[in-house]
Amino acid sequence: MIEYFAEFMGTLILILLGNGVVANVVLKNTKGEKGGWFLISAGWGMGVFVAVLLVGPISGAHINPAVTLGLAFSGLFEWSRVVPFIIAQMLGAMAGGWLVYLFYHNHFLITENPDSKMACFCTAPNIRNKKSNFLSEVVGTFVLIFAVLFINLPNVEIEGIENVKVGLGSLEALPVGLVVFAIGMSLGGTTGYAINPARDLGPRIVHALIPMKGKRDSDWGYSWIPVMGPVVGAGIAALLYYFIIWMS
Image (cartoon, rainbow, N blue to C red; front, side, top):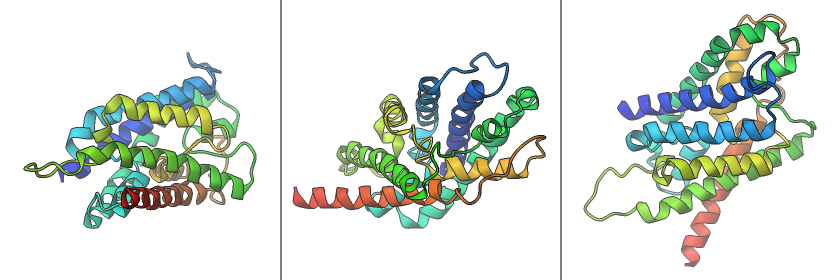
């Protein structure tokens, strides 16, 4: 159970810091108002860094259903643990989304733009083209999972050591933060780079449930893209990983 609690806490911290930096940039009268995309990308990268630093030694710090599925597809994680991990990640993402709302409550009250309020919970494309938006999420997640699989490779089989934790934690904390930062700076301009089903769906559910004045709908017609895109991207990364390992 400690691994599932670690995934809950790791995902909570990821969303608290990641969506927290979005709120700091887009809400009114914050210290970081209009800080721009660089600050958002850096905040997400460092949010991953902190989450991995804290829970990596316990659960491997998947903190992302796409990572869990990518590792399972590749044979590096037991399928019997996939659903409990994803449930823990979803609950952690919802808790983190709620904490962001609580933390920035006064700034939500004075922010008039409903799109800015929703951006503090979930992603939305700047140009709405579902095929292109889906591709953006597939490609962004592919880069993340491909990095995870190959940087983990030397650490998977260690003779005489049992219960090796395989996940983002095996990357060490800073490098994985830099991977997410790089994806945000290079590929995040289209959809906001969810690259994590729990990161988007959990806080989106919170946005739909909280009684926030002046909010818009939660854009459920788009919500499947930041869920299914990362799943497909993780699957492609796992298949290519298998092919390259087989060829070598």
